[in-house]
Image (cartoon, rainbow, N blue to C red; front, side):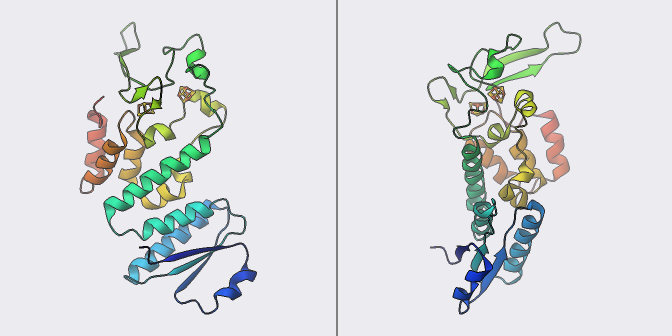
Length: 239
Ligand code: SF4
Ligand code: SF4
């Protein structure tokens, strides 16, 4: 059972209702990501420095578009177990990105072919960009080799797993349309993941949700330099 509580109000004038509330944390939200990150850091610090203290969070939304994100951050900071917390962060970020894409058809899919698949000069004819490949040497005629359809790509159902790296990926076609995701623009990811965890999320395409979560959990004690070296010389997910 959750010990803390979160209440949303829309303006300061509603604060009177909470005059008698104990251990309240009144947080004024806005649309500035940097100040919101600082507020999350402050709340985490407060929580860690005061030990097990339980708070009643009162969020003044002020029409901030990040209210739900901030609520998710409070939920995450209240999950003590690292595995549970990372799983919550991972799944919530997947749902968040799915929500941004829902009903947009940014990739302009028609008959299983995205806009890039339909362009004449492109290598793949369907299934978007769900294919892995390796670059050949500079003196080779072909630029790429070992082109393989991802094992989680199914023509009837699409992707059968939840891979956050893939969800955050935007090809040059989408970037030219002005569509780009950044871990730093998702409050939950930018506040709760360290540099190594952010790299894991950024670069592990073609793996399953469980594989990515395993990597997030298992590299806790691996120094960042060693992690970078390993990433450079060994693909993290076998595909
Ligand atoms: S990201 Fe680009 S290549 Fe991949 S499915 Fe969308 S439009 Fe196609
Ligand atoms: S894991 Fe990634 S590459 Fe594989 S099917 Fe899903 S979205 Fe495509």
